[in-house]
Image (cartoon, rainbow, N blue to C red; front, top):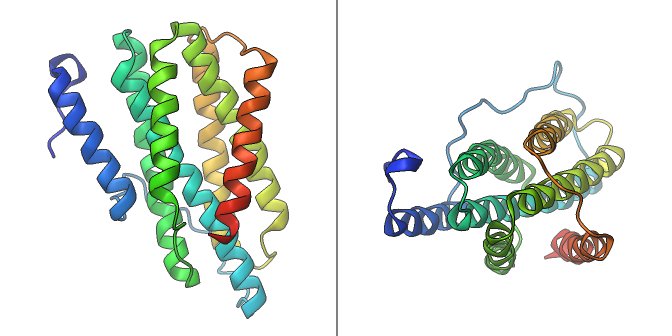
Length: 216
């Protein structure tokens, strides 16, 4: 589907674009704009236990990117601020790279995506729709909190990935840099800090998702 400039898109265009993005996120390996990060050396050959562990962790990361696509798409669809809409759409494009990289790495590891991806996408899209209707500062605050949580989550995966799995480590490291950039951009655009009950609820929901996706 051809992407129109944000200012030229009607509501119907945006809905069709959102549906197209959902189908791409859930049923295909999207085309990345940037090449997949490559380590300086290939690392060691993984044994069965290491491959299984790396596959489970990268499945969780892939789920995170499915959710990121849904969140940013939902926010862009309902945001009333054209400048913020463009920011959400740019971030979604970065997340598309992440989605492609993690999907390819899952295939290389002989692992599958989460069976519950449609559920994760639908829930995240709904949250994105609500966040997009909030004030600009609150919507950006949601982005900051989401990205900071993802940064911490990726830090934990760098600790848990097999030492010899340099390919997965290269992908996760670049993803972490990108998420930090999204959070910084949202802060600079005027994000407000979310109330602690909202931040706590977001962390609890993320824990349920990551724990479940590790196995399913």
